[in-house]
Length: 182
Image (cartoon, rainbow, N blue to C red):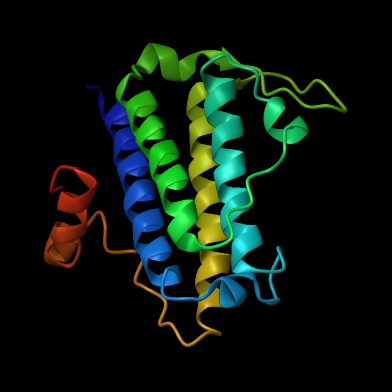
């Protein structure tokens, strides 16, 4: 696997691990606490974390040539608590890892059209769409992290993934997720 393709695999694994860690913390909240109004782009942890899942599914479907627009015509995911959301997010994360593991420099350079209802944007490369997807995740996980800080649950560290010295802090979670200890 080329360094660029390997980078995207690493980002997908980091994504799965960070989602796992954040959802684990959120599972300590009641459904009412999860849905409580908070200050952020979306008005609650529930809305933010369900949005992450919806957008993940949209981009993955677009990258795999499926009907991505259905994620905006079908009912949006609305899991009432983190315990119910986790299996769906984990499945999406595993799907994204598998998608990234199939990439090569050639496939990462291919053009992909992201369907929109109101316009036809120019194509983007698969690499740029993946980079955007990971940025989107980080952006909204950061907002959820800040909202969690306003609850009785301590927000987890989400930046202990890539450095070798941080492996002990993530080893058990990587094993639970079936990810290599990198």
